[in-house]
Amino acid sequence: MKLATWNVNSIRARADRVVAWVERSDVDVIAIQETKATDEKFPYDRFVDLGYQVAHHGISQWNGVAILSRVGIEDVQVGFEGMPSFGDPAVAEARAIGATCGGIRVWSLYVPNGRALHDPHFDYKIAWYEALRADATAWLAADPAARIALCGDFNVAPTDEDVWDMAAFVDSTHVSPAERSAFRSLIDAGFTDVVRPHTPGPGTYTYWDYQQLRFAKRQGMRIDFALCSPALAARVTSAVIDREERKGKGASDHTPVIVEFADDTVTSGAVSAAAEGPADV
Image (cartoon, rainbow, N blue to C red; front, side, top):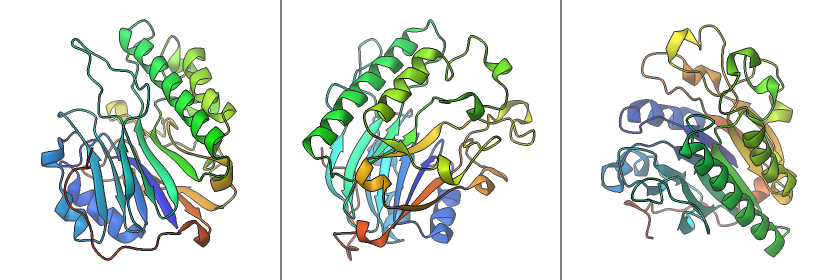
């Protein structure tokens, strides 16, 4: 079974590229972030035609998360318990969606950016991590054998090796002690970064800013992850970062990350009929 995670930075602007990538990559499940679409405007038909079921959560032209699956999609959940809100008035943003796909509990997560170290959005980011850690810890406590994948754009570079030059990140978000501690809390809870062993650094990134020719200069960050529960991490056979998809006209500033698991992770079998439309929440 192949599972991918990808911040597409607008599904409508990049639908053709995403569809083409899905066709040639032959992935079973894709966790997508930053769709920048409401449920009504997500291009369901494009993926249903490829044999995928779709669960999407989007409430505005910002954020937005989705899961595409051709091995079943069950028990869709929008958000997680305790997930904080933001804004005035406060809104629970479209940043998390979970579903069971082929025996794996997959979460597509778009962690808040934080904006700046002393911005209220930074406090929101840390609170968001804490709520996720609390829920993820409870999931494992309830079922230590659960196969769970926390996938997405975590907006943290957890080690110095995960950015091209730490000198460029003085007093910056994404590398601060508080953010790195928040990310590490998920590892301490029992989840494993299953991609890193297969994609060693330095110079291995998942995101390159559009500004200042960052991609051409190889000035990237590794902020997109698949964090797996112990039972699922034990089934990983390979993982790759598809750097090629960052190239060319109309690319997202992130690139797909793909993890492959031993075949026995698929327990529900492929589905013959795809569901079209927003998640039932």
